[in-house]
Image 1: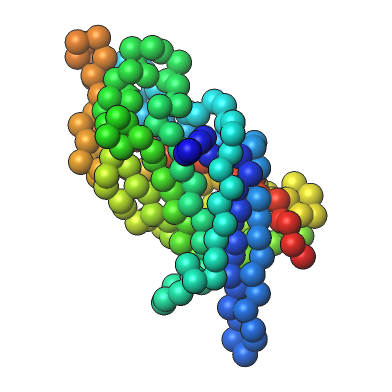
Image 2: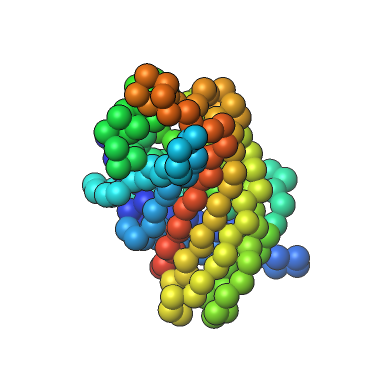
Length: 202
């Protein structure tokens, strides 16, 4: 059974250093992680997000998933979000949003983390990272470079916040309409997420 994600799943980062062996570090994606999609209408801004996470899947990532020519630190991890769990704080908008994303045919939004330019350092109070991710929505996958702001929570826990701008057309979608089209939704939208990562090996 596919369940809501962002509850404890494993991200395994495979660090390959020159003249050294392979070192894999594993991080748990904590329950406090979140994802939000933000956009605008001709009247105001709107926001849809996943408010609750329950019954997590446990995902195991193997070294084989990191093979190939990958820049920086190969990162093997996929976060799956059930479109049906999104809430726009307005029943009409929520229904239109889910319908626009074709959630019955494509019930999940997935973010595949491909690499980071370097390993997050829990000993550093603040740093900026970047890396490639693959975002798949409504049957269309798009690779982008994501910039993250890293915040140290404690010696083994960090928070990564990221944001990326898209257009509905990037995924072959048409912006939703609410109340018979009286409210027009703009083409642009922002995907924002917070990853709270806890290192489980040292």
